[in-house]
Image (cartoon, rainbow, N blue to C red; front, side, top):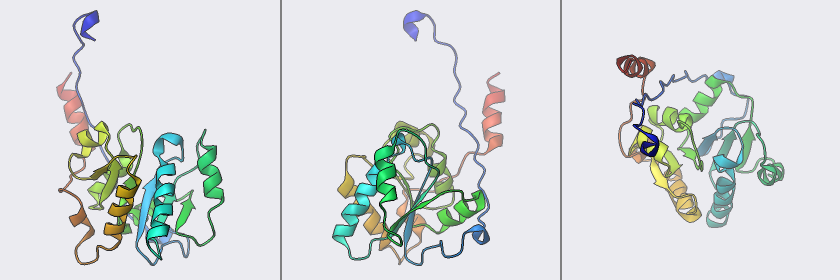
Length: 206
């Protein structure tokens, strides 16, 4: 902006995060998988990268006899007919399941028990699903976007969206990780920003 004059003063105030209490009782009967599972959370739209995860699970199905479960939590959005068609063709009882209409408590219960939160987004605002999962000590695998680097630093496992086999390798490694806690798979301890932190930064700048 300097080419048009002195840039305005700007302050970065990361959003506060409310960590919802897990409510397993809100989960539909029979939803919680007995085997290791992974979660991705967000509207099913092109920028969220669900096509990558569907490709990765096809890779896993060729590599191992019983792939882990992928729970796709979120409502269908727009301009994503190719992904919707793939979701409509998923076999009943298969390793990939589409979930919509869950309460915040039910989603929190699923995330808390997951092997990892998967965030293959090609573009993000604040990246709340990754932030909330990291705050629960749940490993995060995400596309290497600047927003994730800024907000959650070295906590996630960063992979490029083009590296489907690296995603499959990381997911397979976390599926088999049973001797240590899930949080050991992350690269650090993450403390989510609180709303009081956000408003303190905002008010100090005025």
